[in-house]
Length: 225
Length: 258
Image (cartoon, rainbow over all chains, first blue to last red; front, side):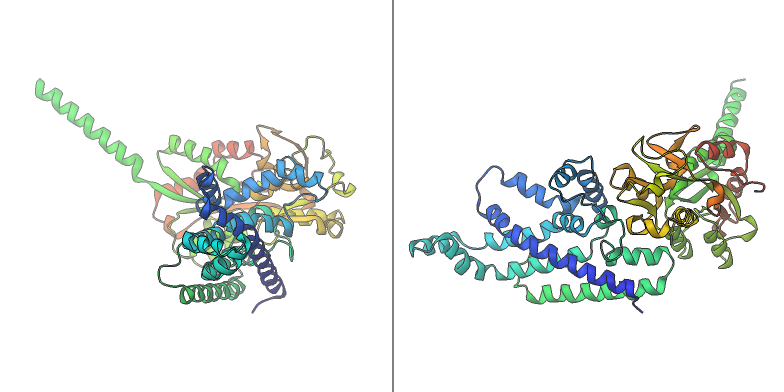
């Protein structure tokens, strides 16, 4: 059965995934909009950086974050100067790492959804004297709704499944950085296969439900990662 | 005359071919605990030179290697980071209990990347001038368990516990400390030691009687039973050249007894 520390890990994982997804929707929406509409020569470089976590092994990302956020890294020096302290081994650090790690899973579906909104609709709205914000709220948002749902589900699910990054920057502290995937790994390493099975099975079930939701939501051909 | 020359050349050629076959015929796949991979690479090279056999190495966490072996991985010899896992494999009929022996004894150090942080008596631990102490997972890593024993013996465990961060293995623990994210931590001497001295930072070599010996055992696996190279390697690990390499990496030797 699930032990108390298993439940702690589940709660922590959901908290991390929820916080990360919320932040990513807030940060990712303007970024995805810009990527979808801009003619700037910076478009491709930015898109490449956003996509980087898709390609990099999570342990590489985690290792560089450990260096960057450490006392000798530029980010670590900044956070110390700001009085926040160092980010590794803290929940905040995990949120920062997860936002970077899950970024493409949120930004890319949003960008696809925004790109699918035809320019003529925006122009029509503008001729009716809608402000850009009005247009975004009343034209773009409803049309991109399924893109938002996909982005949120993928961002959340991907953060739940995160392992390598957390392993590198987390330090395995109960109720602070010990998430489900790390807890499962610990169970397996300690040969507590029963406990591992309980957690792992719930994770498989969770993934199935999420993917089921995703696939039954999507309009044919509308979802692309 | 010409025919004889040709024949002798043929014989020579055949001989070369055969000896080449003999060298490659015996090859053993060896599972090595991650902390021992560096010395083992040297030992394997020397082993190939001295015996002609090839040892192909695959490193990983001891628990992960155990799971692989019990699920049919084709390893002939296993060099574990502890003495429990080989015993367990023998009990479960995956290995030959009579071959189980301690090839190295690990030494624990309190280490910091900062050259001025750790004093030679380890007083820094009680002084508490640090935010995080890194250890390996005490449940799974022998060096982590030893670290907890040391802190308990010094009556500091309860005080330090809130500051502990845990690496999944000593490699990761070393990373936490070397990047400065943990100011001090317990690692294996072998990670910070080369040719008789500490290579970087500052360290306290924890007295051996502060923790139960970190025995690293090797065992001949079922798959190695009919493999000459596997058996030769088990013997070679007890030889003087192997022991010399093991000691140069900061481990103690335990064979034939300790």
